[in-house]
Image (cartoon, rainbow, N blue to C red; front, side, top):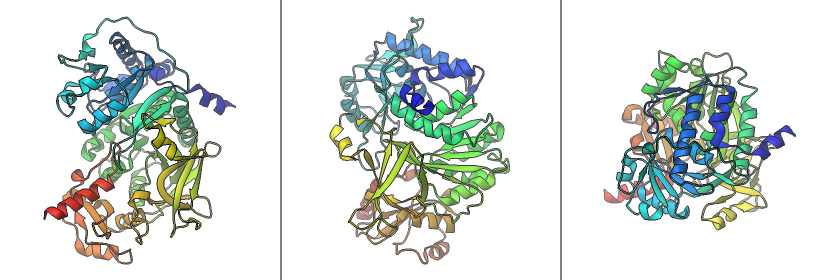
Length: 523
């Protein structure tokens, strides 16, 4: 009954920091960057100070005529201001629409059209840089976090405004809109309610509680426009955990920061953890105190898990992997310990949360799904979004009697574990699982920092590789690694920085394949 009651109340983003401050007013939030909304606040603040900042910004938004139920697009530089603005917008009953700083201006304009004349909150650098002039026609109003523009209202100028009380919207009302990764085209706008976000919060909180029983510092490098950040913040803030929020994942900077604060929990994207493998060899031992590594987005390479766990000096550290999607939240979970080596089966992403999520694999051709004949992965979850904004038909096409098609293919083992083999659009006929082969290559070639297997123009599997410090690939080591694996073309080496990525650092495989084809045609 308790879990049901919590789920029915709905998560309340607008008062999240205020409620956390009432429980743990002296708890601290540490940033690796300055806030545009409050440059004088510094990089270390109490949760009570942050709650005051959110309430102040909400009052300024109200003064700027933002009202309950209205859409407010947030498209600014990549800072924690995005998250605080989302909470402030929610506090006045409006609906934040969070668009990644990585999106190009034309994409932002198209997503604003779907939001039907929203308010736009941005900053001078973004407004004068990537955004087209049409945003002024698409927006009900344009608001700046700092600075000035002739056609915009500066929130910084709205000082001394009357403090407004928080507006509580019904739990089934939209409370947050985020966009999908856009790995297969133009992003979709996913509509979350208070109830669906609370349903995502519940299993994650229950998964953490048996593992972390005392107060630990948690460090996060999660996209500021992703729904995962809000559930992670809610768990940490309401438990009184000190929080470190990172915008920069550069390993050298992170190593220095972690060496000083000694986090006990790390939350990051899989590709971020891959970059942080080098921290395992740092003499300052920045990962020594980590008890729990948490990754919520995609399957992660076993080599990365192995190296990070070996870098911890805690008695029994865990790596928690949650497989899910923007549309449904986390659906299955798997925990790794030090006992699993770098050759462990990384395609097994775990099992559902009992009583909260479920998963099935549906045949693609009438034959039972198996490793050699993977089927469509479908899930049930109360955390599923309610629609795609402006595209309800597209949303309905992915639903079948309450089951949500993930767009991935795989199978379930005889023990019930879900094995993720590929994205459906990334399948290469006759090759097998590209993800499994990538796992094998990572385990065998230590110098690799990324390997993506994509179809070439003639359908042949082409491995695109990146190496540490962009050093030339050791071809002899490569030939030894690919022995016994499915046939592939010769590897193509790229700089990691040149790979097309989403807001959550996933590689856009279809875009990479297109660029590779174009590059081949130009030579």
